[in-house]
Image: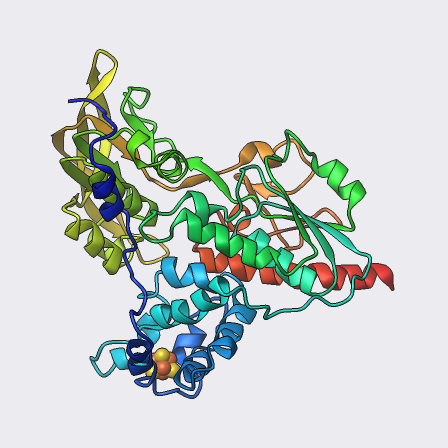
Length: 449
Ligand code: SF4
């Protein structure tokens, strides 16, 4: 057993990594679903969307073939509405809130309808937004991920000239580098970033890393305001013996490699254990299987009731042939000749509930032994501590502290998205970017007065 790459033919890689949620094949198919919508008053689907997209309105516009209007309705609330239609956990959000669920009928496929409208806008490069005349203000944004792009777009629409500094060679952040390719392809991410920046007034400087190529002090001196949206970093350490062995991988690095280096070059084991049960864990597990691993086992220390991923995501993993071991946590990784051979897990049981009402897992005396040649860690990401440590910016455990939504303790420095909340959904980051832009505009106005 050993890690290997180039396991499949090009055609097989193509099939394994093709679009998991294909778009509507015909206009009629989209219209049939759009016409099922009840256009609810005080629509629960809209209320459950972190960016408050007016769902009944955009669906109504689809029924009248006003696709441009529909795309505008979506994108004016969420400029990455195209990407969100592919990666949002809609079962927990809009579709989970659809009134059809109460009638025990299939919810309206809101995400697919959203994709139907936004995909056209991006493909046809529709000009839906115009910038206000340049107001002479300049803002620097750190990170071209969802929060940074959303903030930059809103600022630019208001006439501010924005410069985004991005440490990678492409924009999109987590969307481009951290999500399974069968959910959203790198090509789509690039188109979406280009569509957002085509508004004008947004310059993106790639391969520019905060703390290395640029400093916060310089940006504060050269711009009217700075918005920090640099996301979160690598996966948390397991802190168990054997973590250094060859074959132990970080889920974020694993997905990053698949998205940047191409499927055939990424090595995967025959027997893979994935630690964690969030969206990243599911993405790592399903992609390991699709890269040719024979066995993939997800290991989670709690039960299905407490898992952070959605039931739909768990279903994808199960359909891909991944198995799950609930109530187990890694205790030791053993190896031979420096390579992983065995994972020992402690069996857990649910104990008392904490203040949040969640029953806490406690270890039992039992263990499970798994013969594996790869262990992928997907136990949550740690903040980019080095970016905030040593700066005068207030932070807690590496997450930037904000007063209200995005105001930091430094005058003119704002922050939002994962670097503040520690890692939430893409759609939350987009709303954070909108909130940041609003507060920056208010700050610029007050500064001028
Ligand atoms: Fe349409 Fe469902 Fe939203 Fe009602 S809750 S407006 S039926 S999508």
